[in-house]
Image: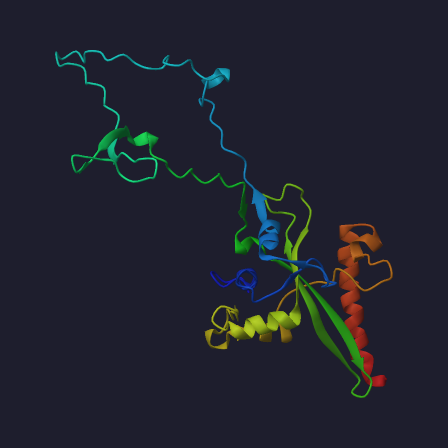
Length: 269
């Protein structure tokens, strides 16, 4: 899912930018994000570049006018010092009050003006943030429902939402906390994956002839994951319920084992 140029984060974000996919704030999928808000959530701030020698150098004050100008001196070989360059100029037509060129003796009157006085578009403001690379957004969170079919004595898994997370370990993440970039309905993602088969690819590293669409990869559970939360009245994750990240990870392993054993014994129902 994170092959070069075909990262799942790239497929999702580009679909949001095209207006093909709706982003939501959380897994309740009631409040929405627009593309600019999603981009802001996956960006880190850029500090303004400063120079110690800018302006007044190490003293922090601007240099006095004309103080840094060097006088023209002889180069020691008897040749005269180079003459100062004349400022660039430009000839423009003289306009009257109505904006039409002024003519004298049938000829347009021109005047010479310095080039610097010609209006120039101001430079764009420096960027204050930059988005993370798609490879950096490697953390996803799935919400799924487990449905028990009594007639067939079988457990079915239905993915409801997929959330794109900002990992807490990224260098630009100053807060050091995991952040939700956006959440998406799985049904919407399936449409995006099916409509973009050239980019939404799950690469099979063992068999080049068995690459699959990302929608098929999720249906076949080809991803690697662990349980972080089981539905409960308080809405707490396992780490909060068991009092720590280590305890939460152990609880996740135990929960996965219990689910496997429960599904194995379903034949008796």
